[in-house]
Amino acid sequence: MAPSLFDPTDEHEMLRSMVRDFARTEVQEQADTFDRRQELNRPLFSRLGELGLLGLTVPENEGGAGMDTVAAVIAHHELAKIDPGFTLAYLAHAMLFVNNFAACSNEEQRQRVLPKVISGEWVAGMGMTEPDYGTDVLGLTTTAVLHGSHYVLNGTKTYITNGPDGFCFLVYAKVSGRITSFLVDRTCPGFRVGNPIHKMGMRASTMSELIFENCEVPVENLLGGEGQGVTHMMRNLEIERLTLAAMSLGIADRCLELMIDHAGQRIAFGRPIHEFGQIQRFIGESYAETEAARCLIYQVARSVGPHQRNRVGSDAAKLFAAPVGKAVADRCMQVLGGAGYCTEFPVERLFRDAKLLEIGGGTLESHQKNLTRDLVKARGH
Image (cartoon, rainbow, N blue to C red):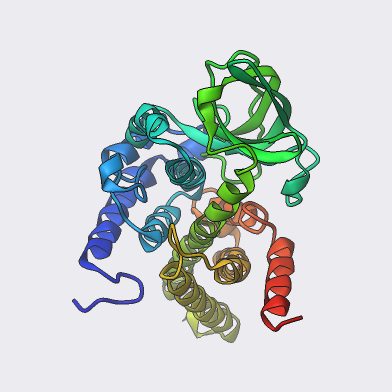
């Protein structure tokens, strides 16, 4: 088969086939159960490690798969067709922690941590958002003060995916007013995880606060140098936003399939409902928007890597794709009618899951702000 925008190499095509099969044979059967429990399926999460997905973008000489941003998009796209909540836990671990940590850590830190997180023995996450600072991340108030052989952290992070299940986290705190990155794990005195935060959707991933009360973090857990946190944060944003956009695409793909199948089978007034103009509009618009999102996401993914940035592209991809996932899920529910509103069909779960993608990893409003600022600047204003 000739290379395509969506599977540019044989390796990408094989990855998609593997993840698709895994999602259909192992993820699908448990999705509704763990959504209802509001729990992360830890044995299934370990399977991601066995398949080599937890270190997908980590260089091979560091124990990873050595693949690129397109590969990360493929994995999140295919998993989110079946279980977006589980996929979000994967994203928080593999993108927000592993991908970022591998780029900003030193050799000793990588040797100590990467084998544990790539295998899935440790679940990981990232601590950035605070009770009073979300999109305005530069205003964060968590502080770190050097005291002998350790830093003392004080503050609270909130809405942290994988918080209840995580062993280690990449945490941003200010040292003398400068944002700095730290590796914090559950062995650090003064660190504790708050109670689980219950959510409308994405329930198969867990969420909580991370609380630091005179938390002692060893000096050897400083990532990079003091004040380098913003660089680490910004370098990881593009792949984070593209994989979140890919999750919206996965939701849209699955809902479009459900919509088409139902419209072909459901009879009303003696005719299959796909013959009615209202249904044709739902299906036609959903297909066009989903295909547009697919092309934008994968095209931008080809231009993002460890040494290649495209903030305009990644902001645009998530700004466009996130509402598409929600809109297609909404139309799917409308086509299925009462059945779609019930838990008998997965659209009810996908509909709830879709909303988070307009908020997490940057709100739609933040993408609009970033795009306007960058585009105006590019015009010399």
